[in-house]
Image (spheres, rainbow, N blue to C red):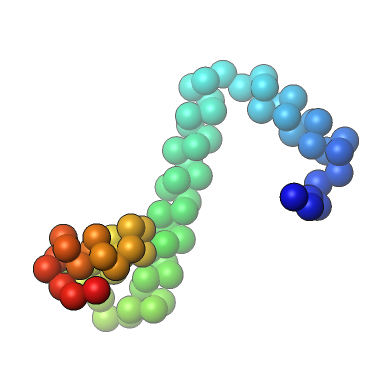
Length: 78
């Protein structure tokens, strides 16, 4: 796969990651998940500005897991 990262930069990155403790790695992953969730929520607000409560949660579930699961959970056609 093509990369825009130079081989030297990749080595620096890999060494930095290797120095992290398991707890630090988990903390980084959790922060990435939180940021992704914030971005997802912001996107839903842009696409569905009137969505509140259950409608917002439906749109969130739909975005995360797809229309089929969201439709089953909320009893809606997909």
